[in-house]
Image (cartoon, rainbow, N blue to C red; front, side, top):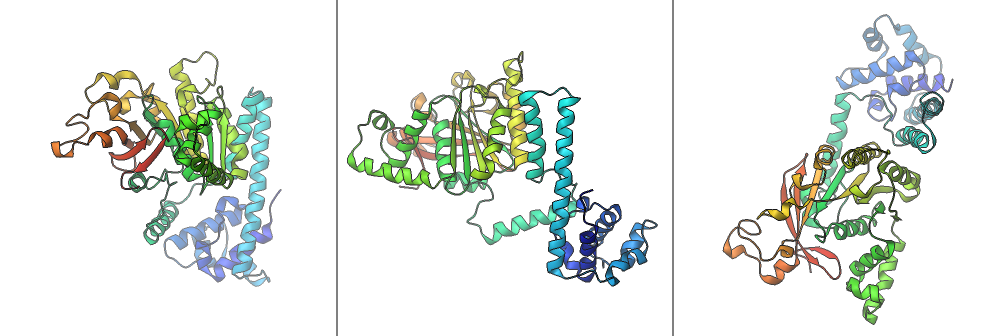
Length: 440
């Protein structure tokens, strides 16, 4: 058995000597191998959460006939080392043994999947990686007391109050949007939708470029070839027209900007996959394979309906539903932000108000169900002149022709943790560059 009873006793002795350690030690009752010490530590945590003294008598009373005060006093008088440093090192030993047990259990389950549950090949590999990844990301843990959940959240809120300039999620680089969303949320699959040429891919590429300076980014482009993606990035980074990048007709000054652009990506943790036929499960597997070396926290999928059906015989609706579920589960389990690009159907173009709606999503039912945050891209100038009541409210708010031509709007169509709304930005079509309206 992979366990260290002496370390478990040492943790108990230390927390009796200093109850405050119960708030600091990164170990859970479920990580104790000896049943008695598992129950003792759980009781100690509950007493501490209720503001009561933790000592052998209080814990023995709480556990009734399971243990006696003498059982709990023995480690205190038999020379077991106490102290904060010893407590933390003993907790680390307990966690290491617990992880060993869970890894062995996961591998045993993987063997059972192959021998008795009929999984084969890539499906079996995916199941095995899911089990091991859950352990690696810490998602395969015991249930937490609600008081622990609330305390952890209060700590995050206090950190936000102390540093209001930091976003809780991943910053997109567009201050107006980040202020509304508090950054792209980790643990969720955020949908970015819009009609063709409305800036979906340009927006996601710019977010990837900005985020890659702080966290690892993994992009999957299922439609555009790598040369086109590189041209889009170079146009954004150098402010040269993408067409000039493609044809090589850029100025010497713009060529100097290429060196800066290369330096930008040279120091970025930014992976790119040019793949036209891949399922969501295969995509997630690739993300997990590269996650540690790339420190991946943001995944961009461009776009959802081009993902391969996970099974033969599924309808398009069923395939999109299954793939969306996989991406949403991966975002939640791996605590990453997924940015999933989706096309809109043509219904919006038949309305006077052509701004995107959730109901315009192709196969929208399952996508909406699994998405906590949906952003709609809209360039009204593609439909002609601005319309009163749609693109502006009062005559004096009507945008001038140049502003209207460059306007790029992001609509928050769904946000389970915030308000709906919209934000306007400037879009420079030739360079694929989106900026806050107040920026130069």
